[in-house]
Length: 237
Image (cartoon, rainbow, N blue to C red; front, side, top):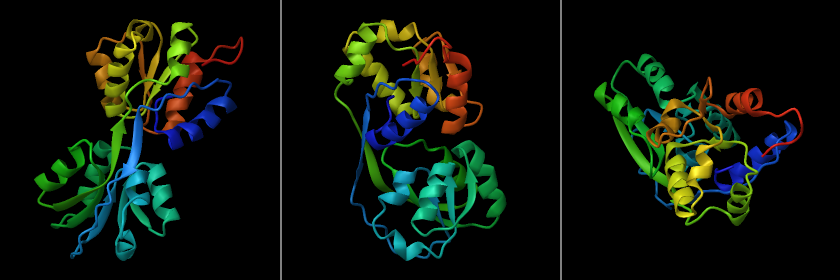
């Protein structure tokens, strides 16, 4: 499990519930940047991560605006903080046409963004004539090494699958696995990715067994894991 610590802990509980033994090795640490949201005449908010909502300083001033969320988890965090999500879709490619249909006239979006992110959403909105003020309210810092628990489990051949949630975390994982001398063993086991975009570094690195969730959310990712990697003989890692 390569997610940031808080997310990894929650996912670990779900994995145990379906019979797996999780091994945690967060490759990212999420931290607030402290960036202030600029005041202005915005028409709507964008958030592509729950962390964007949770770590945005001064977001309370914009609660009257419609908020559009990438992912149900982001929408859930928005509701918990008093926002009212309007358009919700699983990834940037899915939400972009819905936003363009919802906002046919030029619109000024305030984007609660991460420092390292894909440009699909911003580029698509700008190409359609909209304005996007992206404020980097959080960053994902790369870990310096895989956890010792993970290194030991890989060396012992005890890992049966790897779950991937973001393209950047995949890239960091591959670099750390190579540095630890574990990459070749990682090639021999199945990898499961949240989306095609997330899986791209695995394809580029010629990882032979890569499964992609039918839809870009955790439920579908874990369904894929359970259907393709679960061993009826006992719990797996």
